Amino acid sequence: MGAVQATAYGDGGKVVCDNKGWCRVVADDTQTTPGSAGDDGKQASDGGSSPKPKCYDSNMANDTSVPCHLDGIGDWVNGMNCYFQVANPQPPAGDPRWEGRDPKDGAVYDAYCPDNPNKTSQWFAQAPNGAAPAVDPRVLALEAIKKMQLLGPNIGIAPNPNGKGVVGMPVWMWAKDTPNAWGPVTASASAGAVTVTATANVSKVIWSMGDGTTVTCAGRGTPYTASYGMRASPDCGHRYSQPSSSQQSGKYHVTATATWTIDWQGGGQNGQINQTLNNAVDITVAEVQVLN
Image 1 (cartoon, rainbow, N blue to C red):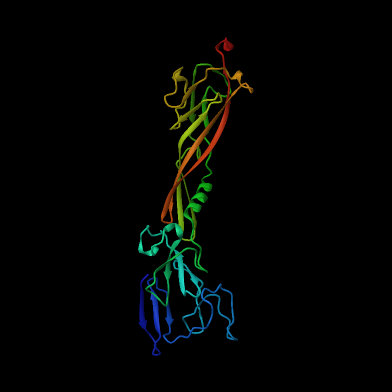
Image 2 (image 1 turned 30 degrees about the horizontal axis):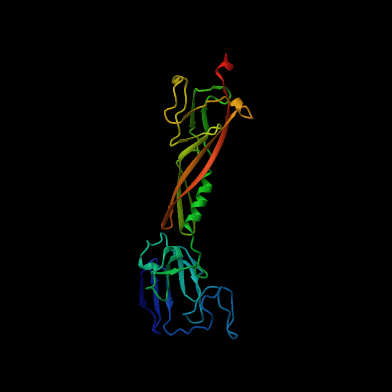
């Protein structure tokens, strides 16, 4: 953040303004009241002097009170005499603002220091005392995923669960077009100045057919209609070699498990999270002679 300084008083004081138009008077002959840097914000007295305000500038006479928070600038940190807020987006790895550190080891904060306008950023392993903590973008991504309310596949299958199939005849499987059950689904989550947006899509569905076999389908599958007759599904099908009477329940328990691939970005980072959700249905498959 740039700053403009102008001498405004005969006693040597000066006005310091940032590029947001926020100005203050800084005296050149200030005396610092003794006290610990990084004060935790509690009022404290110093040898009988007036209690310090909650947020104060120790570079100014009598520890002048300052606002604890300024929108768009950040939170004041006593002792450091600066406002800090998490930089959004975070600088790329190798940027000088990382001060040679690995981005995994902390965060870069934008700095506004009225007494040191040339200081515009600082790296911290943890949030400086008094400032809002750095936000882990992946945590926000998980919050965005919760908002999506993703579902397992809405199963479409032929033979219809209310009817009967026949051994050796084609079985068609597909995922019905239902909100939050396929994608894309997008949601965002924010904390402070950091916003993460995530988009989820189903990348595959694994069908467990109940007879010990599985079928992996890359897409939704094709919905069956009577016009297809006895043709096999072109992209997501199965054939049973035994009747479902071989099962203890008398039915095949078919489970469809969708893998959701969720891409997220925000806070200067990006990533991918996978999540699996399933749904199930029971179908009856009979020998041919049972239908005669």
